Length: 208
Length: 241
Image: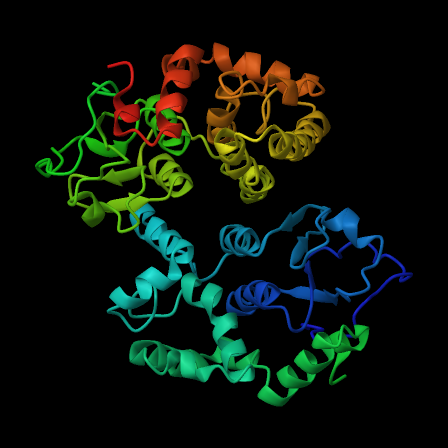
């Protein structure tokens, strides 16, 4: 269903057709942490979706009609509505689709999550709960997670050595079914980074 | 009620007591465009509130307990809950208080307003840079950039074919971007909207809104503030009082 293993579309590719009813489409890139946020929320809420991966070093001309900034992630509905900016896509999905709400209903609690998103590092030193939104996993944890997944791949784990609560959080996150179902292994990340640093367009389809 | 004309509190001032029930407090500064967003929403929704102005060049020590970053605006409820970041305060007020909703109920329409806010986001730091730049050469480069950003917004509004950024009536996104347009004249940046007829019409319509006009600051007062602000004077924040 996710199509997350599909080769990326690049310059000269045919524009995709309209999004079938009952589905939402996300323009993504397998190794982009911003797009990962959207994929996490789609997965966590069980939203039927299709994924089109974009080659970010060799963007299709038609992609700029989806997002003038040419960035992923972008959501496209079957009505042709386009939503971009990762945090905006995540909030849109939470509101537009039924099932478990990832953002709290209480306005103050919601504001708190947004303040955390804004000043992540300041909150770190004051964090007293297992997850960033409380004792269970919620939106803010998914928004932050992709960068920590990167930490391991970049062998920057030492960054969390002085933050025991953060290490515990990472361990708890990896146990979450949604997070673990989208985990990319370290070798694949490293393969991507290698090629990416060489400015190779092959990077985006590494491992396929 | 608004107390928007109260002298600012600085270092050594006594911390204010708890917020009385039935009221919400906003820590503000009379000339801060970010804090103006919050005051616009408070006024538009008719929310009973009190204003405490902070001297941003001479901040009270207690203020950092309200917001560790020491910035305004900050909301404080009678339960002692604190909310920072201007856009977050505005959304909080819209959700927590009854009356006219400033944000659309439809998730897509709401997302559209947030995308417009994103595309506006380069404007505030640009305008601040222009204010602080004395050198004419650097200034003209920055003005070029501002012109580009304003053209983007002109296109957004023209494509929408509505008077306001959220439709045919004024809504959240208009209040969120207004404060910087209000300051264009005082900063002698009116030329930046010269080639933006749709935006000019929007600005005229905004000035007619009762909420916007009740919080309008005249050009001379802004310029008095800017003068003192650029000299790093703590007097800036109470200019005109």
